[in-house]
Length: 470
Image (cartoon, rainbow, N blue to C red; front, top):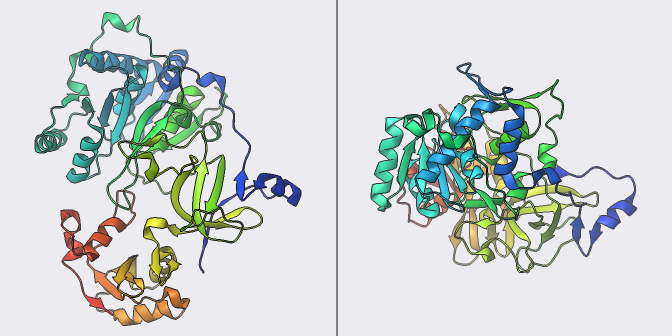
């Protein structure tokens, strides 16, 4: 099998140390204690650190050269908090921020943290259906956005279609945001007592269907392992490139890091995120069918338990993502070896079951993409009355290769594969595969297409361009 190493613990020369970490097929790492400087929650910490920094520059717009000091950002956030309060926003309410990449992108987020409201985020690159889905899911009390007529028209159209009466604030047009108010001088942020409470709602990438709303706690946002890379020295601040908006959790980590410690964030809309590194405290691998904990060199689902994992998916039953013992079901199929090196083999939702055998699509997709005529590939399960499912490949061909023989590509893959990995479902050439804003193929939509239920307009290019070869 072709596998990819995704995570490696520090190599231990003494196997006794490894033995101490593993008990009953559960691997435990040491607990990372919460630093006392995080007491009060995200808003409280940001408020006090912005106040301390004064006129130090913390953000630079790499495209325009505009700069933002801690003092000016604090003023904007206080005014926005007061503006939200004026609109009836209170502790625990959901506030949606719909912003492009600019100096004010973080303002509604921080303002929400200040007053104990829960910010959620939408990416300006998502389509209208996804906007509709996210608003219906979170049902925010208010939407804060920037001055763009097309954006406003889209939001109003969406709200009208789902029949929700939600206020929309265009921040740069609000007098209360632009002018001094007496209440600014005495403003104080909310002190959060329970740091396990939900601080913000982020969204998943949506590779297996519509994005899910991820509720993260204050503890998760204050991940000491991820934040400790920001230097503590004023003389040598770290320069961090921010190339996405707050739809992505990594940008919030960058924001907290530079405000809490010493960094300058340069924002630019011209780069894409390739990879986000995360750390977990404890993990185990369980059998896909029985849930039994597995030992080394056996593929199963990775489950994790940590104070830093999500609280829940918003409006989704906990049983869908947590087992009875509180372990988070990652949906990742992995195995680990005797040195605790982990190998990624696929996603459970993507796993194809052929005659009881688990077939990881990623292995076939890697081989398909190595063919010079294949630009992008996805493998899904095609229902079969006797075998359960057969692996079926959908390929987006490289420019100028539309006349390629699909049988030749199928044989190219099959010749190197174990029998259960043969492309028994055939191969399909499509004009364009549907992808998320992060470039992942939308497997959920492809499966619906194979079931004959494809009605989503975003994938009409796919359903209109079949040319299947068995």
